[in-house]
Length: 109
Image (tube, rainbow, N blue to C red; front, side, top):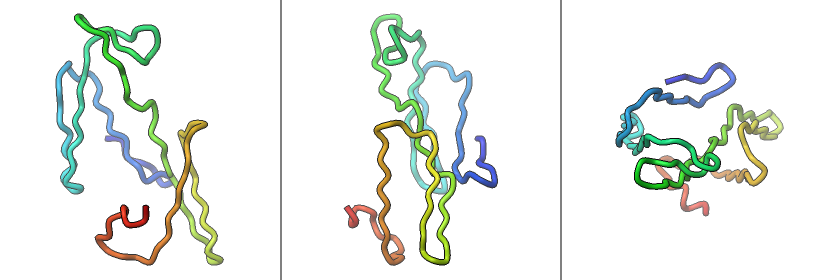
């Protein structure tokens, strides 16, 4: 794992040289799991497809994750959000509410 620095809160997980197969990454504190599938093959035509031994696999993985490395709130209630690694189709939606512990975010949609 590569932790963020003083300007970044996020963490990057790098898993180099994995053999082909299926893996499960368990995030204990969050009680979540992430399924990882590693394919052996080569990119075909572009990075959209992977040519494997017996099939052509569409690579639907996002190229980059959008990052919010810094959020600041001033005394005059002005909010500034720094956004990194976004593309031309990215949108940022901000919701504000009084603090409600264990409140599902779906109630704001």
